Length: 396
Image 1 (cartoon, helix red, strand yellow):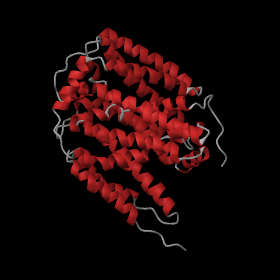
Image 2: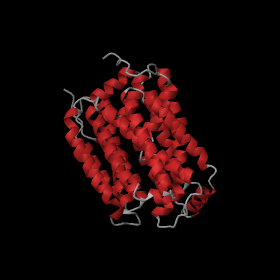
Image 3: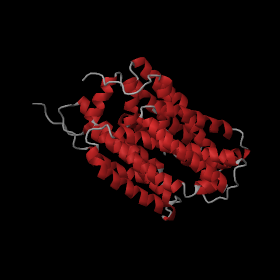
């Protein structure tokens, strides 16, 4: 197959780095650090951030050509479609749950809230058109600048700092980050290859050097700032989820900026996935399937604030953690069994992936829902061992 024809007006690694950072700043980067800082402190954040940054940046180094990316998408189009579909459902669930409490947590006055929604609505209208016109990297760069301005603003908020100090003071230090590290490595080192927006960027960066530069800038540089911003408002959100009273942020402008950052990043990710999904083979025939999936996620998201708590977790957080199973188990297992193992043994049978997932899932339940992270280590060992010893079809 020849290299795919260019479809945008830019080959700039800086702009595509911004695109990658914004397309990857979704309901994991915008929220998971909040939970990890609450439960494990800064060690929890670092075992999330380092594998995430390295795993995402590495794709631009490992897939050496545009045609290599195109071949991968062609051969794994179904899995890539499902990755985007589940990601869209996850986003819809999360935003409906999050917006049920975040405006109150940030203490945004009604007049400012109306202004936030108007700004986000205008951004949605403009960015939807620019993305369709192939200007997604330029749109992402503007969004990146906006988010960096919010990050700078948060450094001067004593109220945010007070909430974060209190959050860190309440953490009980343990070995939990060590038990969770294998899951983080498994998910973040393998999931990027199923993200259609990553492949889009790789195919527009028309040389190995540009690809490596764009992915490195995008994740080591830009995306790192994005998840650092999440740590700035983590104390507020975690405190509210723990039932603590939260005083309003001193500046309603800063509170509005944080909300705009979250909503615009959310919209950008959703938009670029929808835009790229339509290019996948058979996407048109899957529209009904996607609609059903999104309606189901929306219904659960609306009901999430009223779902019962379990093991000290709010019902909405349990739903969030269950969605995370897709990225900590199912999609990386696909990469391990259907891509890596198949390349090592192209004539062998690969029937054990779903069996391995079923056997490993209870370990992740114990680790993430029952909150006993020591179970995560044998769970990861199990799915790796099955991949190594799975039955092979004898060569003819």
